[in-house]
Length: 256
Image 1 (cartoon, rainbow, N blue to C red):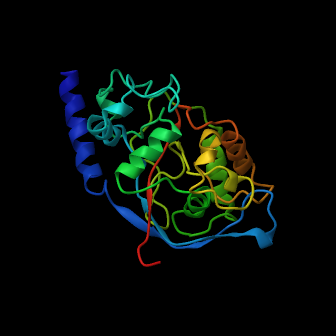
Image 2: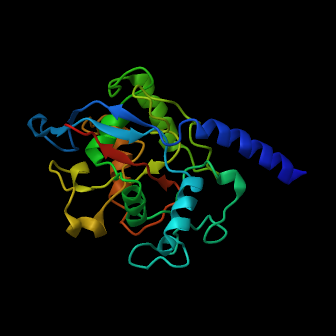
Image 3: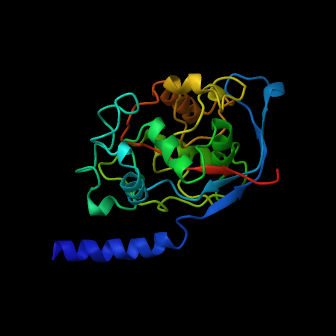
């Protein structure tokens, strides 16, 4: 009987998720000012497309079925630590209730490969921060006290044992769900979180890339949540699997 109800719940969730799981939305270009930077060091961010949801366990299962080298029993140790897909019961199975939860315990290398196989890529920190500073009604909510307090409340909460489904927080101004309130997310580069500069394409940085999730511009020294994110980024390496760190993909807009 329990399995029957699980199946019913899962089917209902799949129906809702399936309506937009592959949808990407346009993120209008703008500027990003890295932490500890001068106003003259703003990074120009071109318009890009972003997945509306983080990648789910169900999505990732399809990936490892198609690319067996990225299964937990086969992945090379240089690409992932022992936490890789730790919450899965086997190479291709996990608790059915987690199907639409964000996949976590995935290394930067694995997240990068997943996006590449979809014809996409991981967002840069600048891109993530630009999209992440939007609230439900504003493209830039960095000065919105209510929004900042909500974000601070989230980063201050302890992790839950079972993550909620994607689409369970809020849809921001651009139409992107769960940039805050669910999991942190991998970004392609790390040094643009600290100083100005574009590192995309520099493969020599792979071993020191960091995550950047639940984030928006962290130049404001009064934004405590931004500095918590900064600390998180500087403590995570590319092969790490972390139980509250997921990812989503982006794509360059054509004819830019």
